[in-house]
Amino acid sequence: MKTEMELADILDRCLEQVRAGAPVTEVLRQYPDEAEQLRPMLALVVGLELLPDPGCSLERALPSLVKAAEEHKRQTTHKATAKTAWWFRFWRPQTMRRTNKEAATVRWFSFRPVPLLYRLAAVTTVMVILFWGAGTISADAVPGDFLYPLKLLTERVKFFLTINSENKVELRIVFSSERLREAIRLHQRDGTLDPKLLQQMLEEARQAVQLSLGLPKTSRELLVAQTEHLSQFQGQTLEQFKQQLPEQEQAAVAPYVEMSGRRAAWMRQMCDDWRGETNAAPPQSNAAPGQNDRRYWMDMCPE
Amino acid sequence: MENESEVAEVLDKARRGETEAVATLCAQFYPKIMRYMRYRVGDQVAEDLTGDVFLRVIRNLARQNGSFAAWLYKIAANVVNDHIRKLKTHPEVAMDENKPQSEIPASGSSPAQSVGKKLDLEAALGLLTDDQRQLVTLKFVQGLSNEEVAEVLDRTPGAVRVLQFRALSALRRLLPEYGGAP
Image 1: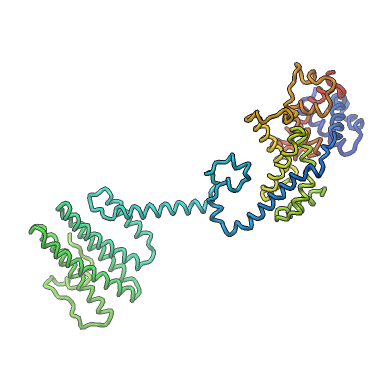
Image 2: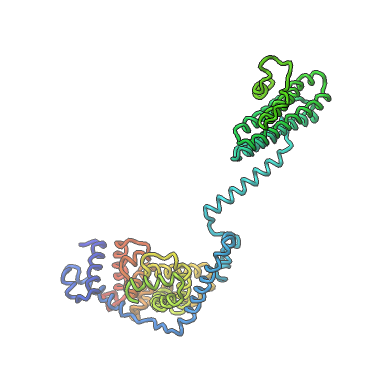
C-alpha cells in the first residue's frame, strides 16, 4: 500500500508524460497497481484542460485596459516630475500617491518608510535645536544654579565641535570673559566671591595665548593682541570690582588684578617684538628674578 | 509572445515606460487572468477584479523579478483574497450574483448529494477547498508548472504535488462519471 506522498509523485509523473503526448493507457501500464486509481484522475485532467474559455471579448476588456493605460500614463508623468520635487515626495502622505478608491482606507498621516539619510538629517536637526536651546536657556547661569553644568557642557561641546584653531582661540577668549562675568554676577546676587572663577578666567586666557602661538604670523598677532586687550579689560574691571568689596575680599582679588595687568603688558611686548617695534620697554617690576620672564606670567595662576 | 524571452523583452520595454509594451502585456494576459478569476470568483466580479489585477501590475512592474506568470497569478490571488476578505467584513456588499462559486451553500449532508447528478466539472470546482480550486485553476486551466504554482501558493513543489493529488481525488469523488459516488 503506497503512501499519499508516493501516490502524489506517481500522479505527477503520469501527468507530465500525458502532457508530453504519451497515451494514457501506455503511461498507466508503468504503474499497474495504481492504474485503477489514477485513470479517472488523468481523465479529469483532460476534462479540466478542455474547460470552455470565458469568452473574453475585447469590448468587455476595454474599460479595464483603458483604466490600466491611464494609470500607466499617470505613473510615467509622476516619475518625470518627481525629479524636481524630491522633498515633496519625502513628506507627502501616501493618500496623495494612491487612487481615490484606496485613499479612503489610508490614514492621512501614514507616511512611507523614511530613508536612513533623511532620518540622520532629522536626528541631527533635532540635536542642533536642542543644543542651541540648551545654550540659550543656560546662558545666564552661575555656579550653584541648576543649569550651570549644562552651560559648561554646552561650552565643551561647542569647543569640541570647532575644528578651526583660530575659532578655538576666540572661543577661549569668550569663555574667559564669561568666567569674569559670572564671578561679578554671583557676587552681586549672593554676595559670594568665588576665586575659582577668576582662576578659570586666567586659565582660559592663558590657553588662548598658548593656542595662538602655534598659528601663522598674522593670525597669531591678531589673536594675541585680542587676548591682550581682554586681559587689560579684565584687569581694569577687576580693579573697579575690588573697590566695591570689603577689605578681606579685596586682598583675595588683588593678585588677579595684578596678574591680568602683567599678562597684558607682556602680551603687548610680544606683539611689539613681532612687529619689530623694540622701542617699547619691557614691563619692569620689583618681582623676584625670573619673574620678569614672560613665560612666568604666562604659565602662572594664583592658587 | 509565447516564450519567456519574448515576455522578458516586452517586460523590459514596459518597465521603461513604453505604453505599447504595456498594452501588449495586458492584451496577452488579460484573457488568462479573466479565466482564472472566472473560476475563482464567478462571472459577475471577474471583470472588475481582473481590472484591479492589471492596475496593480502596472504600479509594481518596476519591482517584478523572476517568473512573470507566477508573479501575475500571485497578484491575482491577492486580489481575490482581498475581495473575499471584503465580502466577510462588509457582507452587505455580497449580493447573490456576486457570490463566488466556492460559497454556494450545500443543502444536503454532502456536497455530492447537494448537487446531485447535475453536477458538472465546472460546478464541482466550486466545491473544492480554496487552495485546491486555486491549484486546479492554475495548473490545469492556466497551464502553469509545479514550480510556478508553488511560487503563487507559497508552498514547496512537493506540497503542490500532494495538494494536486488531493484536489483530483476530491473532484473524482464529487463526479460520478469519474468513479465518484452516484
